[in-house]
Image (cartoon, rainbow, N blue to C red; front, side, top):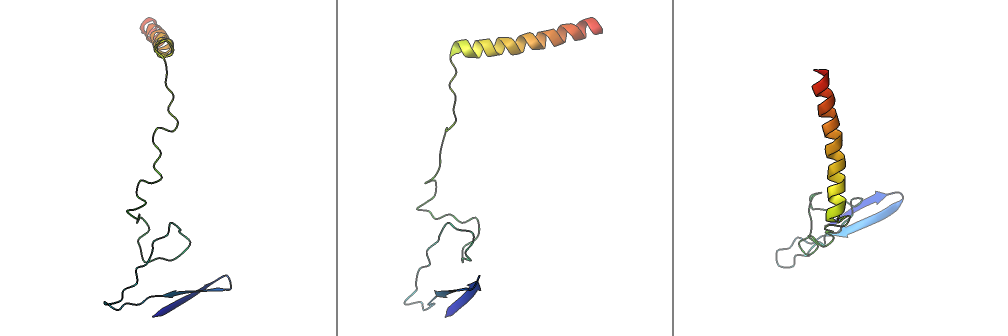
Length: 88
């Protein structure tokens, strides 16, 4: 069975043989512009988690930096609480 499809004046042909004795395996490609017999959210098991990037933008803070940042936030919260306490 030959399926042809034209897009922007180009001919594309895909040959599929569906004989049970001689089945041709269709290779999955990570492209969305090409019609494939796989669902859109399919991922090949050989490529699964291949491009996973963990903790790329991690910023490590020292204890002094974390304490300084926490004290700035707590002083602002304390000022709001004191203002609301005096207001009511």
